[in-house]
Amino acid sequence: MKVYLDNAATTRLDPRVLAKMKPYLTDKYANASAIYFPGQQAFLDLRQAKKTVAKILHGEPDNVIFTSGATESNNFIIKGVARANRDTARNKIIISAIEHPCVREAADELKHEGFKVEIVPVNQEGIVEPAALEKLLDKKTILVSVMAVNNEIGTVQDIAALAAIAHRHGAYFHTDAVQAVPYLNLDIQKMAIDFLSLSAHKFYGPKGVGLAYINRKIKIRPLLAGGGQEDGYRSGTYNLPGIVGLAAALELAYRERGVYLKKVRSLRDYLWKKIQKEVPEVRVNGSLTRRSPANLNVMFGYVEGEAILIDLSSKGVCVSTGSACSAADLKSSYVLRSIGLKDHFLNSNIRFSLGRFNTKAEIDYTVNHLRNTVKRLRSFSPIK
Image 1 (cartoon, rainbow, N blue to C red):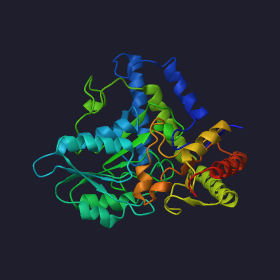
Image 2 (image 1 turned 30 degrees about the vertical axis):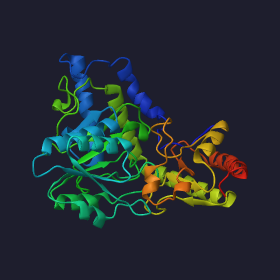
Image 3 (image 1 turned 90 degrees about the horizontal axis):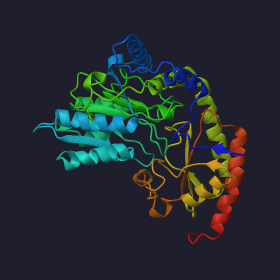
Image 4 (image 1 turned 90 degrees about the vertical axis):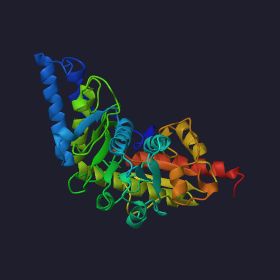
């Protein structure tokens, strides 16, 4: 049996989304920037995609900027807002301790440009406490960036509360919401979000397309120079097949949200109960209450997570040791370190992330092999 339990890394393209994309890969191939009729029709389809996205996010279509994915969106927003709004009185940005590497690295680049970067810590459940953020805010702060749902431990932040605190101090607020679809009802207006990032491949859409939702009333400097597409905010030929796919996938995600959440939560809870029953010395990393229902990050005492991953892979089961952005980088997780895991447990963790196409039979198959894998690896582990 082949079992895919790494949906937080990427999801399978939904066949219904692919069907929506196909015409734009074959017959409707005109450039949406062209002035002849097929090009203008393509532009109208682009505008419709913006309207679809904006309606779901409770935002404005003109504020939806399509990108190559959340890495580009996060870089665009963090660097663009910081650089455009910097002056002698404002030169600081704040990010949380558990942000995605693209946010951390973007902030690090700004640090080399002379910006001050502050890291707001999280508690043992991976939650940014409002008081901790308030302590770091001052009149020098330009932007606060806190991810809505953590990609490793599934922690869900109170984005509305954090955004309100940032605004009270005159700072703008950005959230990397990549892992939040469809788990959170993302409402730009109610949550008072200035900037937001998404990637289509996290919710059964195509890879290579995402969006940056921006507040056009706030100055932001473009990341890419070129032909001036997206009103100059993001130059580059429109990836119309991907854009149509993103809009279709987002629409499906929220239309079927209730059934989907019930399914993944049920599978996740079933998986955790079976692991507890079959494998000793385990614990969940992060909060069990303020957590994405599709995420289960488990610490397996006295055994290397990478060893578990490789052994399960040989049985056809795909899982992750955390952030799956670089298989070549097996350094210990700064996210797990941030929530207080001891050094000897930092590399003993597996992330299971459930999705639309998983089944109960797959969970049974996975836990059966997981039990044998952990037992065998612990039998010759030097750590007891």
